[in-house]
Figure 1 (cartoon, one colour):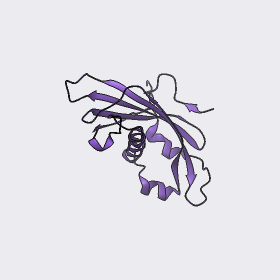
Figure 2 (spheres, rainbow, N blue to C red; figure 1 turned 90 degrees about the horizontal axis):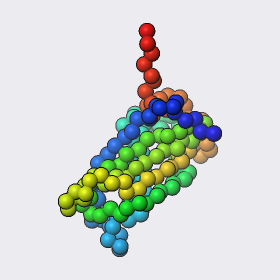
Figure 3 (tube, rainbow, N blue to C red; figure 1 turned 60 degrees about the horizontal axis):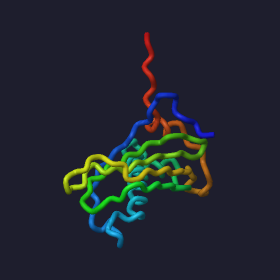
Figure 4 (cartoon, rainbow, N blue to C red; figure 1 turned 180 degrees about the horizontal axis):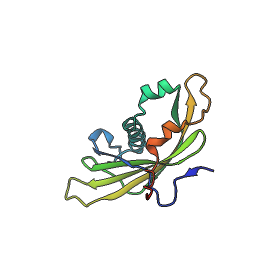
Length: 156
């Protein structure tokens, strides 16, 4: 079973704003499913780097996270010019993997701003593997800490 955060504790969320570009659009005239997947990967790696775990840090550790599974639920299409927020957090931890959630939210459409709207949500299982062997490896505690909810304050 995955290790969940304590009840009521929220893991830190990482947010990044982007604008859907013309090259993100598919033949149906909206943002491509491949682009949503690229955005899920982008915000996860940026979150990790912002927490002090960029590629060089993983190299020094001798292990890195790789995707084991992506699930994306598409709700509403996005279009070129839409202002998009990518929001991600690590929901749970196992010995050698994590479950990361991502929300893709339209902040405005650039054509009258319909307001925030959830476009898609994703769940990604990331497995930690050794650079040397490619085999699963235990996630060290020091890697988990920046992604965990803040510790509750204790009364004196």
